[in-house]
Image (cartoon, rainbow, N blue to C red; front, side):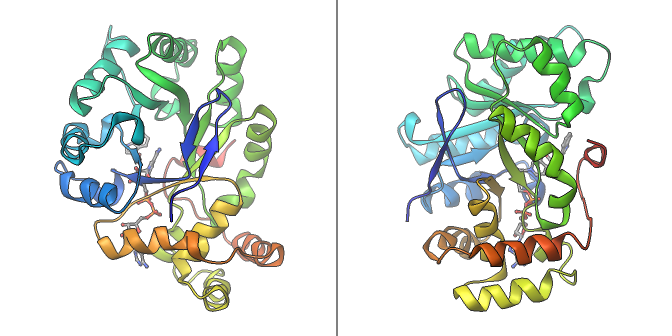
Length: 284
Ligand SMILES: NC(=O)C1=CN([C@@H]2O[C@H](COP(=O)(O)OP(=O)(O)OC[C@H]3O[C@@H](n4cnc5c(N)ncnc54)[C@H](O)[C@@H]3O)[C@@H](O)[C@H]2O)C=CC1
Ligand SMILES: O=CCc1c[nH]c2ccccc12
């Protein structure tokens, strides 16, 4: 089963499922898990400067030996050294990744660039990077509505995505941001999507996930993946286990959740607010 793609507002396409190289993989050498993901048919790799392993992501990509246009690679800038430009920063990433360009380059978090005018200046740096062909698309991560207001005021190009913690235990609180993004054509990318199984397994969603897993003939993790896919979200998830890679991909072969199933997940999720990353997102 191949991974579906979504269209971005700059006309490019993005694979709906990405393999993440942070969090569970907070390790310097990720060659083995990234190669395993590519071998299992993942085409979208989510990297970041702050994960400290772009060089080994690059080694895995080189060893996989796929034509460049068959892989979609994201990386993110979290901070700039004094005097460093965004172009210099991405060139450092590209050298480690051993690539001429990334498909998507993100501001990792607005919290690194809070001084007056700084976020705007950094966004213009990303626009320059796009104009130079060093990134096909540019976007943001962990942005609130107020951060978008700052950037959209000066933007030549709108951010194409916002990568945020996204699962049923933050969904209700995110609704105003999701509405704003939809109005601007900005796609949501999710991280932490498996939180109701991994970090809050005894939450109010637990019986609903169990029941729906039985109904569609899958696992609770696969129900969460289908919920995200059917909400039109790009899902960034990860694992070091090959069987889990296949479990994630297996979600595409399962029947869709019904509207009532999706509502049951939304409603049960709304009973608990639980965020694990980027706490500033609690104030949109
Ligand atoms: N932009 C940002 O600020 C952030 C981006 N990310 C990106 O998202 C990726 C995924 O983030 P996560 O929070 O790890 O996502 P996640 O919620 O998808 O969790 C993945 C973890 O769940 C585990 N898992 C899967 N099935 C399980 C089961 N049945 N029982 C118990 N554990 C199970 C996996 O082994 C893996 O450790 C990262 O690697 C990174 O690339 C992550 C955090 C912040
Ligand atoms: O990417 C996920 C987690 C993470 C680690 N360091 C930072 C810094 C800024 C935003 C997110 C993160």
